[in-house]
Each structure stands twice: as structure tokens, then as C-alpha cells.
Image 1 (cartoon, helix red, strand yellow):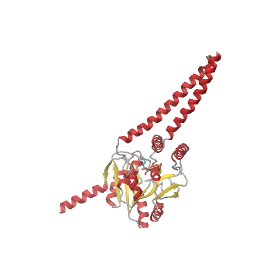
Image 2 (tube, helix red, strand yellow):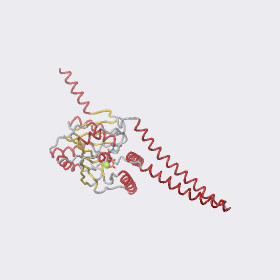
Image 3 (cartoon, helix red, strand yellow):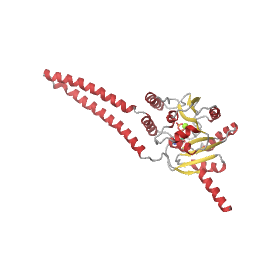
Image 4 (cartoon, protein in one colour):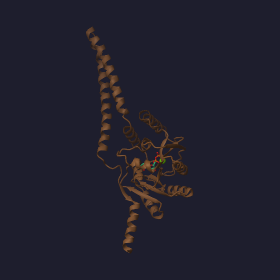
Length: 318
Ligand code: UDP
Ligand code: MG
């Protein structure tokens, strides 16, 4: 059986269609499946639709978060709760073409443990978004050797991989990178990003910056090293200027040195501030991790509810 994990945040227009499309593809392929919709604390009708669907269709299952925890949390909740021999993670807006799932399943049958779908193009994105995404991925690639430029969250994973991911104790996660970090036999297939089916993108600038910072700091210590490098550079700079001003002092013309002093104080001050900021950022992440809070809280699982209802019925009858 394959578990299809679909994170959904304010996707009321998409749920039914997405369930229909993916269901049909898997029916045609002749594979047993469960569709796990993870409602990431939506504020619209998303949960009611999922709930309704799960009562009609036994292969649909819903998990409802107590609030919005972000897509990462939704993916990991799906991985934790799924029962399949393999799982496919796919967006609710059908920007990841579900027609690729049969091909992924075939590769899985041939022994591939992770099938990563990579974007052959990045689809329609704004210029600023593109610049940000590009530089983010460049930093990630340079500093942690994980090439993510065209990576997406659209992946198939074998049970072994799911278990490995579920065993990871960290809470600030970056699914896209972790799924290649765990290793295993991995192959890529390409896809074109389709336009969104309905509704609007759930990202905003603040969310994206937070996402990028989170992922850079949870995957690399590169920013800390930049600071050390900068510090060394300024030390050399300071020594040169220091010697120069000493020479000037003994030459009897020390008056003009003031500008350099200002510059030095300002520059070193700013480097120290940056350094403190970076250290503080890592520290705050350590603090986050050490609290051992869960990365999501599930308030309703349609499977549990179903079980309770059947128990109740059996209890009454018997
Ligand atoms: N999503 C989520 N929680 C969030 C934001 C997004 O579960 O806080 C889901 C969303 O419902 C969709 C997927 O993540 O299924 C991708 O989101 P979106 O299409 O908005 O991102 P984009 O395709 O623009 O990168
Ligand atoms: Mg999308």
C-alpha cells in the first residue's frame, strides 16, 4: 500500500478535486492506497471538507492540527501516522503532477528507496522571489553540499526511509534536505511545475525569510564561520592602521588620525553586532530544540474516530 501525504492549509477549493485526481490515478494503476490530508490549522472550510470526504471514502484519512504549525510539521505528521510500505508527499494544489506517482511506484518496485522529483524549471515566480530562492540555495549548496535548487517536497520514500526520518529527534526540520541526508538508494525524476489549481500561495515574505534562516542554520554553521573570517580580516586591518598611526604619532603628526578611529570603531562595532546576532540565532535554536516541544499537535485523527465509532457499535450490539 502507498500512503499519499497531502499537507493542506486553507485549501478548501482544492481538497475534493485533489482527492479525486490522485485517487483515480492510483485506482487506474491498481495500487492500494490511503490519502492522508493533514490540515495544518486552516481557517476556512478545509477540515470540514476533509472530514466529510473521509466518511464517504474509506481511503481518505484526515489529521487535524490544533493550529498552524507549517508545512514541515504537516509532512512529518503524515510520515508518523502513515501505514503504507512507501509514502508520497505531494502538494494539495496539484502543482506537483500526480501523473508521476505511477512512475515513482514503478521505480520503488525496482528497489529505489527515495524517488525525488526535481523541477525542470521553477515555474512562474516573481523576480524578487527568484533572486531570494537562488541565493538561498547557493548558500545551502556551498555550505552543506546539499543541492536543493531544483529540489521539491514531492518525493516517494520507502518504509525504511520513513522510519529513519521518524526516528530523528530534532524538531526544527527541513524535509527537503533531511530526506537526502538520510542516504539510501535515491533517484531523481523531472517535472514541470504546474500553475496552482485554485486559491493562492500560502507563503508570504516573512514566512519565507523565516524558512530560509531556519534551514540554513539547521543545516550549516557557515554563517558563524563568515563572522570568524570577518573578525580576522578586521584584526589585520586594525594592526595595519595601528602601526600606521604609531608611526605618525612618533613623526609628530597624529592629529589627522581621527577619521580612521571613527571608521575602525564603527566597523568593529558592526562586526561584533553581527557576530552576536549570529551566535544569538544559533543559541535560540538550541533553546528551541532543548525545550523538546513536539513539532505539531494533532487534535483529530479520522482513523481514531472511526475506530471509536465501530467500537461503540460493537459494544451496543454485543
Ligand atoms: N501548506 C501548509 N502549511 C502552511 C503553508 C502551506 O500545509 O503553513 C501547504 C499548502 O496547503 C500546500 C503546500 O503546503 O499544499 C504548498 O503550499 P503553497 O502552494 O502555498 O506553496 P508554493 O507552491 O507557492 O511554494
Ligand atoms: Mg503551490
